[in-house]
Length: 239
Ligand code: GLP
Image (cartoon, rainbow, N blue to C red; front, side, top):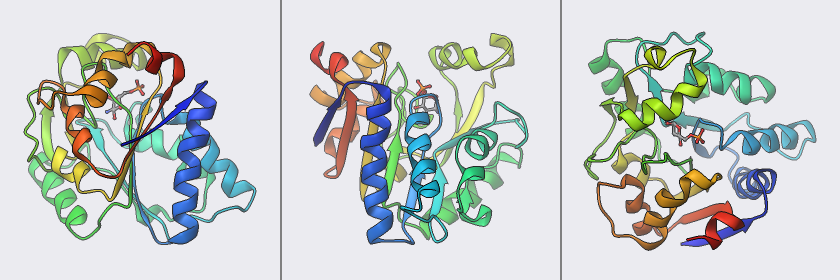
């Protein structure tokens, strides 16, 4: 694994963006795996800037998001469809038909089958990941099988609590989601794991030091040959 230690969130976004932009320049029709949450926002700001400065075009790029809450319409401000549109897609020239997320409203089996089919036909060149305080990646919660593909998840209490900051109340947080599985994530050619805040220290430690256990799903990333971790220096120093 490669570790890039940065001073602040802006530098974290820049380091991750540099890797992605380099890839798009060498392979304009590359496939990106994208993540939501607060951590990748600084990355998306850089990707937008690179488009505005004409350093890069996303016209041939395809993107696959990790996950989506069950039951939220695409125009619900808490849906990941909405997040991606508002924080990245509407500012760049990626074609809407080349951006994929699991459906939050289709029948769950149908949504899973559809997303699995799509992923079967596309190998992800670079997968961007944040990390949950409980070590989840995407919405792969503790106890998940490392062999899993796209599946329906009952969200962990910790995740519901962590993500409630975006909702009016704890009760408003969806209790289910559809997520790419660990096997889908591990199938990416390379992975950029971004870990920003102090509360991710324990989760990051299990990636850096192991052991590889489903109690901390992110620990499996240690086994990926193309893993780059971009993390804050002060968090890394405390591990
Ligand atoms: C959600 C997403 C994850 C993300 C995590 C951390 O649960 N499903 O993909 O990594 O949040 O979010 P944040 O970066 O806001 O801490």
